[in-house]
Image (cartoon, rainbow, N blue to C red; front, side, top):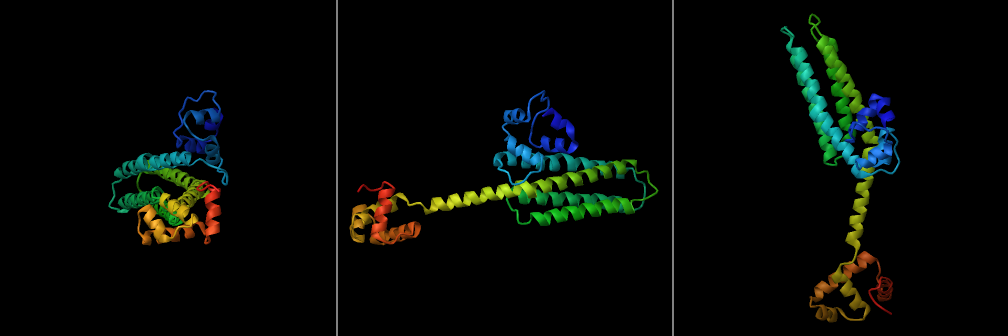
Length: 266
């Protein structure tokens, strides 16, 4: 892990979003990840930007939540403060400095909207969000580079501009990881959940099982109603649900189903 963390700034940025500690010593990647309840396979998939591999959803959510916190609570406010510090030194009648702050705040709002879509699992607007972010950042850089008062000392603004370029790269990498790894995995997981929920809905309820057993035993609707202390209308409704869920229309087929599922002995 020490070699990986020392290899590149880009890798270190991603590693930090898993909440992994420093002071890793000579521990392997697997050891450090397991000590922090991070799935090593998912960790390496994100670090290496490898899509299509099985991933652990809780680990993905740790990465995603920490990345959002990093951008919204630390990086974006820090750069805004840098811009304010640089612009506060400007003594000019130009409105460009104030427009820079306004445009930066609009950019931050775009980022917040982007993250809100993710937190609400609203992924349909994700690509549009990415385009807005890129366009807003490009507009901000052009405003600073082309129109900032040229008669002003701009060392502080150059520093802020470099940080803006850095955050642009970080967000672009973050969006690429989301598009290629995180969102496909989360969408796949949501589809599995929907299928499981649908399967649960298709299971026979306990009352439907009671009705099925009586149908197989040859009782009429009225006899079933009397035996189970329910109305004939309710019996008919249960029988319709049984046929719909099992797609079995004959008494013989229902009998086989009941025997196979140990609801009835031969």
